[in-house]
Amino acid sequence: MRTTFTLLLAAVAAAVTAAPAAAERPRDQDRAFQATREGRSMPLPMIERRVLPSMGGADYLGPEFNGRTYRLKFMRGGRVIWIDVDASTGRVVGRSGD
Image 1 (cartoon, rainbow, N blue to C red):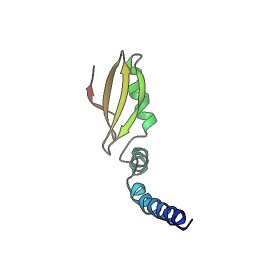
Image 2: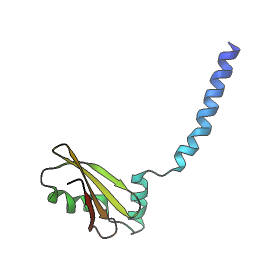
Image 3: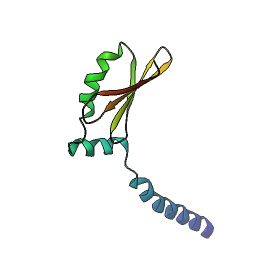
Image 4: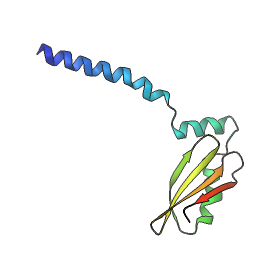
């Protein structure tokens, strides 16, 4: 019984100490929100409205954000297509996978 309690206590302590490390790394959406709020980036929906119509029926799988560019991922005919968009201007700066 005492061993079980000690193991449980150790597991809780490990979980508590590991949580702040995971929380320190910002997620893409948090970085994108902050950049938009600071005026360094256009909102993602505005970027998507510019790019999606030009993708001719490709399935939109979602975005990534690295601080300066959005990378929009599409799938068409079993091929992945990446569209890189300047976050501040909304201009397409790269395309791969076509």
